[in-house]
Length: 146
Image 1 (tube, rainbow, N blue to C red):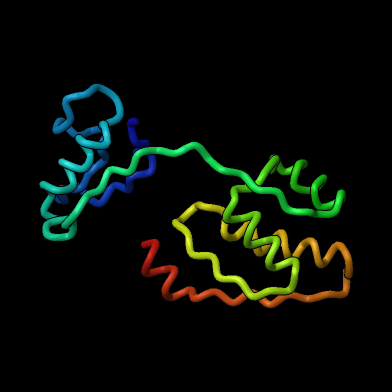
Image 2: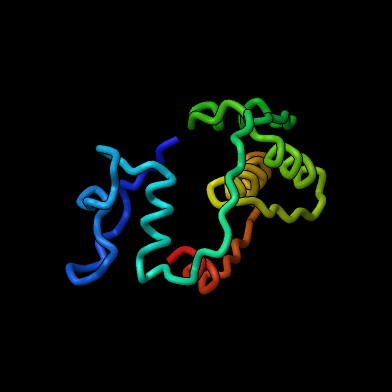
C-alpha cells in the first residue's frame, strides 16, 4: 500500500524536511511507497535516533458489532453516514449504556470519540434536560499530536 502524504507540512527552505512531492529521493513517480518514506525519514537528520524498531502488521478485515440503540439514534447515525460500529465501539457503548465505567484505549482515529458522543446523545434524546461534562487533557493532546 502507498501512504498518503498530502498534508506533510513545509518546514522551511533550509530544513532537510521539505514537501515530499518535491523530493528527488524517491524512485517511484507520484507518492512514495511506505518503504521509501521510512527510508527517507530514517536518513533525515531531524529524525536521527528517533526510530528504533519498525513492525509490519498484516491488514485484517474489519469486525463489526451491534449495539441496541433507539430507532431515533439509529436514524441520526445513518443520516451522518454511520452504518455500523466496530467491535471495540459496540462493546464499549453497550457497557456505557448499561451504566458501567469504560476506558477505551485504541489508536488514533479508531472511533473512540464517537462512542462517548453516541452515549451522551442517546441519553440527551431520552432526557433533554440532562447535562454532560467533557474533560480533555489538552496539554497531553497538544504534545502528542504536534
